[in-house]
Image (cartoon, rainbow, N blue to C red; front, side, top):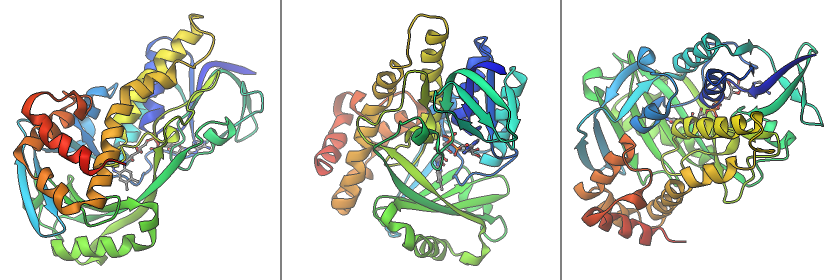
Length: 378
Ligand SMILES: Cc1cc2nc3c(=O)[nH]c(=O)nc-3n(C[C@H](O)[C@H](O)[C@H](O)COP(=O)(O)OP(=O)(O)OC[C@H]3O[C@@H](n4cnc5c(N)ncnc54)[C@H](O)[C@@H]3O)c2cc1C
């Protein structure tokens, strides 16, 4: 029976990044994904600069547009346009990014098996691959995303709830490339628990909407509204697709003795932005640290991973929950705060990764953050 230091189930950004980091540190790694790459994943494909800085590889070869302008709009009515000092969101397509990362993993020595599923055996040390091959692994990484089953099999991930998002691509020609060049558009406070967006790409703009799970039946209507406002027939959108956004509740277990969850499998999506790639890369780094400690005999379990993730992400996500509730409960008051230049200062630093969480902001710029925290308190 073949044996590995680590087996990673799922080759999205969380799984590939973990596999790359482990292989670079000298571990023997098997990565399995049921899909064959390139494959698509419903996603806006916006990598914040803070996500780019955490990515184990420079994604430049698969970046299609650099965004330095944010057009923030309130209910298709009021708007404010902010300019960043440098590009703060790098736009890619997941079909391209994920294939690039999985190819990099292969180059770094990871054994990659595409078109393969892995079933975890009861002892948590053996896996059966589709085709029947059995393998042994010292550690298992669940990176199988929002709809994965690894968490349940490993008895982890209780307390994850879900939002939902729906999106499609409008080829340039049906929309103006010039209108969206270097600019992302956010329509906030219109969809409960979410927002609508337009993201520019190489040959199209990505139009999407997301919100609370209960908004699921209305997402088509929300997308129609976005398209109407931006002057394109909803029928012009190609590759329409929806997916769940997993949101980790406080205390949700994401690490066992010899298994852990990364990225969406761990429910690490930011509750207000719906972004998850920053969290994929941060969790891949923390997972790698915990796994290397275990493999080297410095620790006997992976327990240290969970508090490390809490430390890195909880301050940001707690602030995001507050903002999400503020926008739902007090949309107009929240908008008055959100449109200020002072708040943009913090947002820009967060997007750049200069600030880990809004609570780290100092001085006068704290004032709008305090106001939003008050509006969103539980
Ligand atoms: C509509 C939408 C828009 C979004 N926009 C953005 C955005 O602009 N920016 C951003 O940062 N985030 C965005 N997100 C969130 C982002 O897409 C996720 O956080 C990210 O995809 C999580 O990556 P992952 O590696 O954890 O999981 P995934 O990317 O879902 O990868 C999981 C992989 O596991 C594989 N798999 C599943 N089950 C098995 C199995 N049993 N065996 C083998 N393989 C398996 C799947 O084939 C898949 O390749 C968006 C999400 C949605 C739904």
